[in-house]
Length: 325
Image (tube, rainbow, N blue to C red; front, side, top):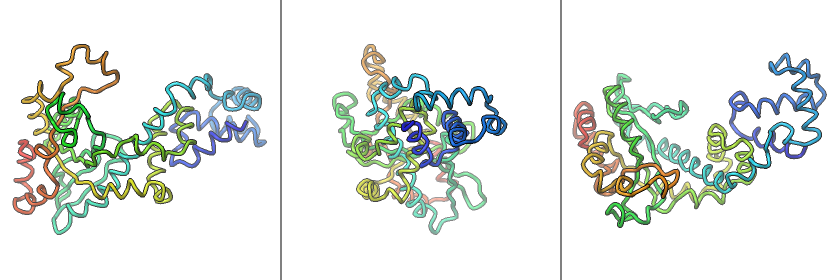
């Protein structure tokens, strides 16, 4: 039962509601039976049949965690654990980027009649809303982290690898649809730190978290909980180097309208997927990306704030809506 206890102990370290993960909820219930409570009492509390709980408890006594989770051995080997580790690392970079933005956000609101409303917990296409003094949205922000270099950028899309940011075409389309629906601008806000990739972060991800991600087949709710836990101050010493690099990066932005206009005008230059025969076969699991010049097509936040101070909020909103920024 050692792996069963490890499964529970690892999940209990995370900010995770057991109701969001059936395996976790069931493990907690069965643990109570193994600790001496009656199956009937647990059945009444959980809704699981007493016979099912009894059978699972017996299986776990005999086979450990495999008594709860069928095909456990397969889950632990496919896909390879290193892919799970990379996924956690990528999610962690996103979490740390959001934290960096929250530290930086006072630069946007300071001395201005603006407020920033967090929407990250809702898990939608919106991470933050920038609101005016009356609470009306000025724009919608979607935060992105960019660190992995596209080594073939010069050959494939005509950009220097250090000056190339990729964004999935469907995200651009959906963002513009959302903007037209809401009637206020949608903005991508990008923190770019070339060379700081998931591969650089992955070795610092604890093995127990990688293991539990394999056990639950990569469930996103668990991946998000792990990233949130690793982003807590208690783990700052492990990731301090990454946090330091986060402060060196510069936020830049591009409105959905401008991103769409560039996508339309530069489709065959910057979306190499439309030029490659059998793209899906040659680049498995790859998204169809539009590639932007970081220096020429993404606006530094410092420039955005200068425009904000020079023009009215209404003028800024119009410029974002038109794709001028």
